[in-house]
Length: 447
Image (cartoon, rainbow, N blue to C red; front, side, top):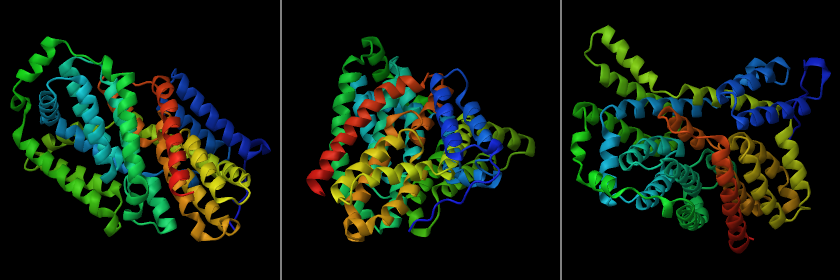
């Protein structure tokens, strides 16, 4: 049996920790949604109150921070920021626009497809941080709004990452707990992911694509541009691309050698900084390093730190376990009912809280109910339901997945507004449609 969390001691005023933690979570999300206070400030205040009010000790709060995600974001932000100075992303943007004859609708399709494919093999945060700079450059060249492109890429990254064991962190947790291989994930989930991508492309075309038009003179201007002239520093470009290729290969092989993506990203950033500053006097080295770190989206990183602690608080108070157990208790030992419940529960919860702690909480609960479902052999469709719900549910709101916030932070740093409600009011209904399709797929194939 799964052991209950240890009692929380030292809670201020003797209040119920479950209700205090839940109230702090709700207050944090409501304040983020209202967008009157910077979201990093809100998250850090919520995290501080979790500690001050006694829900978490400082040590528990630090353990709640997923430093692998923070390291991955930090390292890739440095790499992408330095690479931008070479002109590489502008070059790719011009070439892509020329291949598509300057058609924004065609670019919307190709960028979403490329993002989805890359996200199946790389961490989806890495993918969007590489694709977003190209996207914004394309949009500016064609003088169209970059928001629809970035929205489509967020959706594509979370959908594409669902297809494989390494595409999204929840899948790694599930695969390890259930003994499911890379091939098993591809065989079980890739067909659905392909169908969902087709559906996404069609829906987003009707939402934005058919109305995305560039002026004739802008299309002609882009098609006539000399892409090579966009490269500002050939030597920096060669070093940057060398590091990016090495990091990409390392991401693919890292699971086999038990190295986390965060370590790979930080190592790549350190190597690129070393190459950029090699042979320079100490004063110039310091300026180059400061310039590299100036490219980091510190607001996004500190928002993640605060949010991880807030979610750790509600997890420590027992909210995630209580929700999971109560919903599974309604299924009455029925495998099909349990799988569908897990699918929808994980999708809705993952749109609100980070899917990593939720999946980590659900894994022992699902194992615990295995005897009532007929044994561990009956859990396979439930594991697929958990993976689909957690990964697809991340598309439900701006805070639902790390990829979403990474794109938002990058866009805002480049002067492109990316607001909570603008994203969520379009994303949540689309997320529900993808989960409904996953529901049908589970029933037809596994139940």
